[in-house]
Length: 412
View 1 (tube, rainbow, N blue to C red):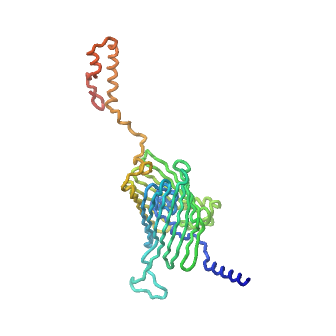
View 2: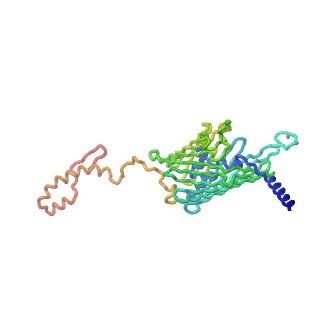
View 3: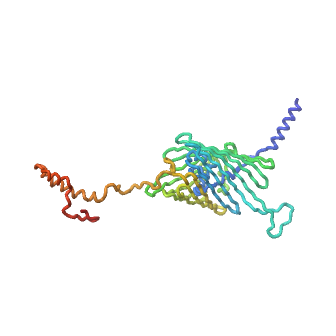
């Protein structure tokens, strides 16, 4: 009996060692790349940006407010011919809920390589290979109350490098409308943990990460538009590798209660001004640590059913990145916006210095003071008995005896 127990223990230890898991930072890091040009121009504060359906992996709760079906595409070229292509589609599932799916590829093609032991080829006759990460995501958003939205997302990853691998991550987030145009958001990234399994049998995972964000909108009717502010904080729970922090610092990556200033400096944010006719101007910082992480961009809404966005992203070490994205709504292409939705609001803001209504003409306004004395002079004559002919004369307006000329026009 004891021998059998020992055999079982040895077998379990062998199985556990064959599936040993390594805790790493940034497993499935491809899922954290910013795909949308609008959010990228705002410092990649994607959690706080509403209406950017290319940012579903960081902002699933925005699907609670989707009113129409949208198809979105983006393309980004990095250094050394590395490319990132992203496509997403969202559909409303009734009032207060929506579904989104997305597909992306991040990688490089035609990379020359030489197998170990082989001689160098002559000229450009190299063997080539491709490195790529393929990602498929499904997200869902639902309005729990009038002020509270919930969003969840599941992401699968297939990695094709020197060896193949599979990855998985689940996210969950909420957004709360605190007051007027102030929104507070929270995202638990990797609540299922972010795990990757490699062809060699190696297994890697990253612990869950918690983020918070905020956004505020301020209508500016005098300038026919709206000003939006976005902010997203650094990770709250554990030490995090920050892409834009290259200096050795003992306080780097500490929890917020251990180093609040360090946590604030690791945040990001952006500012956006949207005109009523569809043009948006944007600027931001992808890290408050350095001004070399500045971002900028613009967007344009064409005929309500097409959105085109561009973003420029600088980097303290690597070359700048240019990002372009396009969103199209098939419904708005062939239908008018539904009443009560933001797309159905008038394009022009109400001007607080509007001219008086034109129901009363300027001619009537000028003529009224000159007709009043005539009525006053005829008042004493009404004390005497009026004949039939005089009654007819009073019923018919008398023709003016003179032409009165003003600065604007001549009144007869």
